[in-house]
Image 1 (cartoon, helix red, strand yellow):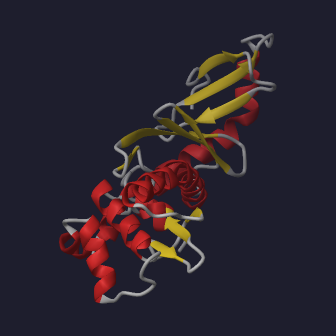
Image 2: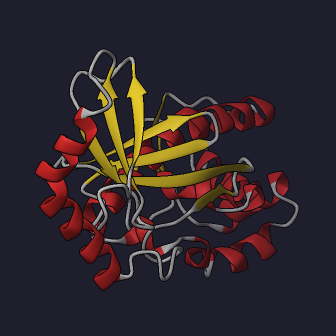
Image 3: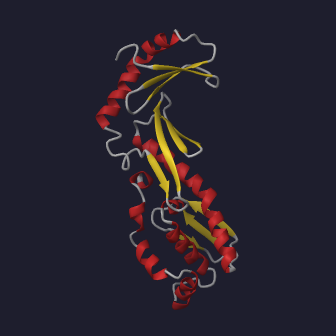
Length: 236
């Protein structure tokens, strides 16, 4: 790698020099304010071995060969119509952190380890779901006259939702990735359990009264995991 093959950026927030290696091999040296730009070359020479290792691992693993299956470049939350552009920055940090700014996500750290990237994205999805799903359920509960004592959100392997006899509803964070009509169907399903803690004909009649396309949505939910990308289920 040529010594000139990097860009220098001065950051007012940086406390120490650092190097960012992007999946396409581009290198950026971030210097704190007050550090001479000439130091970038010295710093690059010190870290060149690490930079080469990162670039080789990117090349060998072809981490962007299948962006949907390995490192997504875009994430669409079908439930609410939000679309996020995703970027990646390799740094010397051993873990991976996910930062959101508006409709953009940036994963920074040891992004060659796709398992760490997937973990960070899953944590972000769970936090996002906690912001969105309870409010949706509350709106539906008010519309149809139900009272929910407590709403929880977590990542679950298979169950899309559950309802306890105490009036506690648990929702799967993966619902954010499903179309809104299916999310509403799942939520109405759980609300109906507040009156009918079973799957009796009376229960399904209650669901159908709230969801005119109940039969269609039940069929679609059997194949709902087609909406879930690999990075969400990685590690299960």
